[in-house]
Amino acid sequence: MNNSVIRFILGNVVFFLGLFLLLPTLVAVFYGEDVWVWYLVVSIPCLVLGLISILNKPKNFTFYLKEGFFCTGISWVLLSAVGALPLYLTGEIPHYIDALFEAVSGFTTTGASIIDNVELLSRASIFWRSFSHLIGGMGVLVFLLTVIPLSGGEGSQFNLMKAESPGPSVGKLVPKLKNTAQMLYFIYLGLTFLEFILLLISGLTPFEAINTAFATAGTGGFGMYSDSIGGYSVASQWIVATFMFIFGINFNFYYYILFHHARDAFRMEEVRMYAFLTFGSIAVITLNTLSMSQGLFDALTHAAFQVTSIQSSTGFSTVDFNQWPQLSRTVLVILMFIGACAGSTGGGMKVSRFVLMGKSVHKELVSYIHPHSVKKTLMDGKTVDHETVRSNNVFFATFILVFFISALCLSLENLDFPTVFTAIIATMSNIGPGLSMVGPASNFAFFSDFSKIVLIIDMLAGRLELFPILILFHPNIWKDLFTKRNIPNPKYAGKLWNKK
Image (tube, one colour):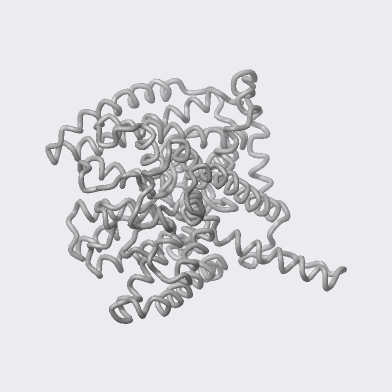
């Protein structure tokens, strides 16, 4: 393993975390809150240690996919562990495991909380929770690719981006991978700014608008108030719902639209299926909840908001959907599993995986009926290679395995089944609220420290598509790290990427 480049990347993560922590420090100073001291206490060591690592540049930047996965997993663990310190040191979350749960939930854009009364938090901490969604939405390592020079070839950079980007496949929008990362962030921040402006127009204060825009952009769901978005105007709710839907779409779609490839954009099967699931679910829930609503528009508003919130994995709420009829709750749970599109800021197992799985099942049925036929699996008019189908199947199997192990661990708490079941899927799919005791009107504070740690691992594993976190539990990766200080041959660094 190329230890020097791992140290360099982790140093950059720590350095930029220090810079990010200066923002809530400034918010605290602006509002006259004394918590600015604790944000600065954490920020300064991060800046110093990070700067030392950055100045000590490695001679060889080349690394394989295993380094990319390991570096990604460790980066997110480090990001969360340090990012939790200000919440703990300020005394606003006096138990570190709780602070860690909140920080992980923020960076992974889950939005599950252990805080009973959000209004009691300082404005600096409210801002930090929301801003952590913005950081984690697109990914901190994707951000690094936009601002730091990583030599070592496109293959090495691709190995880093592949480990953090959600979805079954990662590709380049433009010839240079760094330009791809910059393009993604341009679209990401542009949409965030647009939502911020629209929320201001709808009547929100600047502080409310910026925090809500951050949480929506990252599809995170941390609200500024205990009723989430329920106290906002209907106009604001529709703006948020619209942007939750927008941020759940594969960002390739927006690239195609912006650069005159509209035909390619609307050819994307995943986006079409995502829209079909969203609007179909809204129709079903609207009709199912009409009798308990104040008219058709009220039912449509709440249905549209909750469907886009759950499908995009944002987790905002305007109503306690835990009180909805069984059909509506079942639809929401199904959407928790499916999630948003690959290449978006949303969570879940991704629509593209389910589309690909459906095509694989259809292909298998055809092979039974016509044993000698040769049928290719197509996606967006292009042939899907066997390796992609295989990795898709492995992901499904691994997801279910992690889900069952987590359920077994949480069953030790002797809670009801809906609580355990939806708590796990809400954290693994980075949704936030579930049903029963973890519904939108409740939180995760009642879980034991052991269960919170299990859910923390689930949040990280879900955000990073399982394997960058699971690889940290493999003993061989640590053996390579501490006993084999071999540096990969640059000649072969891009081999895996070129194969793709």
